[in-house]
Amino acid sequence: MLPMLGFLVTSLGNASLANAHLVTTGMGPVYDGIGHFLLTPEDLVPVLALALYAGLRGTASGRTAMLLLPLAWFVGGIAGMMTGIESSPWITGISFLVIGSLVAADLYLPSLAVAILIFIVGSVHGYLNGALLKDGPGNLGLLGIMAVIFVAGTLTSATVVSIRMPWARVAVRVAGSWVCASGLLMLGWLAK
Amino acid sequence: MNDTKGSPLAIPIWALCALSCIVTYFPSAAFAHVEPGQGTGFFTGLQHPWSGLDHVLAMIAVGLWGAQLGNPAIWVLPVIFPMVMSMGAMMGLLGIPLPGIEIGIAVSAVILGIMVVGEVRPKMIIAAIIVGFFAIFHGHAHGTELPAGQSGLLYSMGFVIATGCLHGIGISLGLIHRWPAGRLALRGAGAFIALMGVTFLWRQLV
Image (tube, rainbow over all chains, first blue to last red):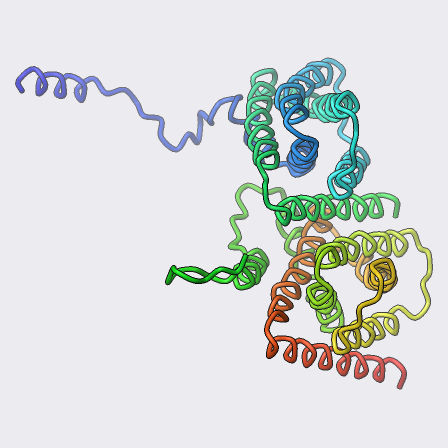
């Protein structure tokens, strides 16, 4: 009892600053990257749609997406940080359209084609991300994005792979059609 | 799918579907650190399909008809409508003219209402063509109306989600067709939609 009390008194007497509310310190670059990804539908929606598609294609594609997508994103991100080309809304619209169509149609593609698609989408979006993060969170932000893509992609693919009820698979395809329709609308706005 | 026996807390699936559509449509607004125009773009898009009763009734009618037709129409029709609607919106944005848009929208309510009243069961491809044809008019009317300073992507997403939720409401309500009284109620709803369509058409022509 006494040692416990002594420990408590010592700990409280030597309390360091809590830096609560993080107004001045922020959450750090890793969490900035995570927050950036989660608050950017241009990146979040294609990743989730791609994970849905990988899940529809089965366990092998789901596993491929789980590892390849964050890796491709990181590789693209590093390249983007070096060259720093601005993001293009056309790429977002095309991503939405293509990936949404694949999900809506539940189109069969061989595993290799799925892997290539995942790599292309991941590296292109990662490249555009890298250009944005260059002057901000930097590499650590990219690591944060990789981590959240890994988690979100894995959970999404795994959920779809584990689907047993036919109507649930239909719901996934309906979600894909919404993504495709959003992409079409967006491309129309850009073309205006 | 609709087993409510044995548990006092069991909720029928159609009620869950309708509730989730309604809850999705009325989210609480966080607006946390969004760039100017982003959040409002999404909510503008979300609210836009509700801007006209003719649009609302036609989209609900698609859901009702899909539920009457059963699988696969119950999900194929509500998938076709938003996608073709987006093509119609693209046409509008690209300046491709479409004559008689408002008349087409009014006629869509009439025709889709008649389909529900008559429990018309065409082949899947015919039903898809009918729904797709009218979706072009709806998309052409809506697609050009993004307010300045708002995000086109978020507007598009809100717009499509709201359209899907309207279809979902129609499908959820349409699930009552499994009961004789429900079938009658659905046909009554179809008659109401068709009559409202005639009203809209009358206003356009007079």
